[in-house]
Length: 88
Image (tube, rainbow, N blue to C red):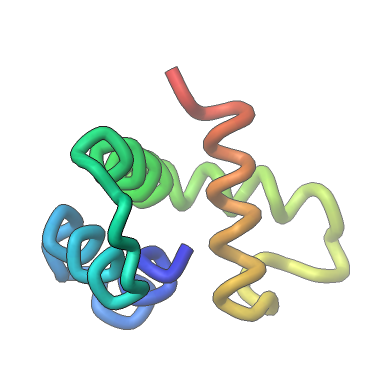
């Protein structure tokens, strides 16, 4: 989630570098290649489908659009939506 939050502010950052940087920043010593690959696939999926995910989330509560949410909540919902409905 921190990676997606960082990408909200700098969307041109390379995704793989950002995932690796955020894992190091969060001091995740036990993250292995599989964990980082999974995190990258989530970040890539959410990034690739952000517009569709936001449209779907906006239908759930018309009085509180995704754009009004704080960054952490917004990205947690995007991840959850992608994992449930958008993952292959």
